[in-house]
Length: 127
Image (cartoon, rainbow, N blue to C red; front, side, top):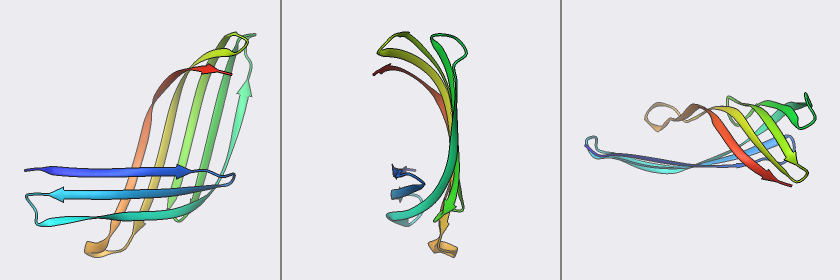
């Protein structure tokens, strides 16, 4: 039984809006169903951020946003601990959570994309 599912998500975020596009391709060999297509929508978003310098070279950054419009609901939350040992270089550890609930159509023609995507991020910044 071969199952293939590919979803390509493109997020474009001008201030106050997020544009989402999903391309889906599926092939289920055991079930006579093959399909795919693209879905595009725009969500209005509102959010905020807070930066706290708790030591000379350390800072805590938080950011969150929620939105809706084309989707039923979308959200994201980010927490970053940043250490800057040199003027133009810093390293960080963070945790990001994103969620999206989108549905269109009904019955056999319904497409539903309801996901939560959490995970850690580590990196090095060069300013």
